[in-house]
Length: 181
Image (cartoon, rainbow, N blue to C red; front, side):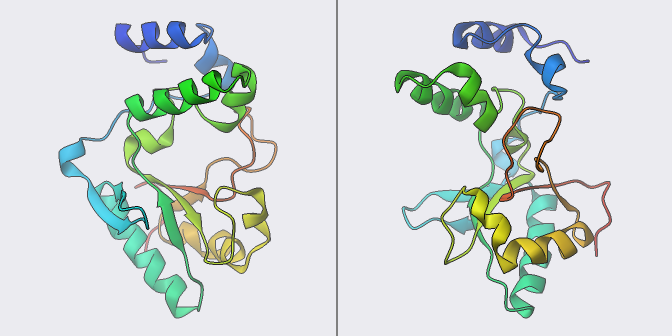
């Protein structure tokens, strides 16, 4: 298991995480992608860029074209997320009074989110509420389940996953080791 950089260890301590967080959850350290190398795959309605690494972006483009050809509309709503942004999200939840354990069922601790790598994308459809487990009931999810692996994407957090993170049918991560077309 990689040794955490001192800054990350201190950040975890300041958030109230235990030293064995990653080991107890079976989570690997996720290295932050170089911001300069990211590719924009979409712009949200509020003007925020959704970005992935070049390889993940190319795979996303192929996946999206195939989905479009099958009359499945996929809308990316989140891609690269920095460790700083992950920390802001957790601090906002803490400030609203949510217990840390509840937060960590919804969001990985800074340094352990696949979004840091620039290879993870959260997806919705025009008729779906973003970041909702009901995404699993959509034709888009069914299509992804049957075809995403062909483009190198996998569902990271299925039901009852060993990481203690809630079911996230909208969260798909690209890996160069998976079969791609």
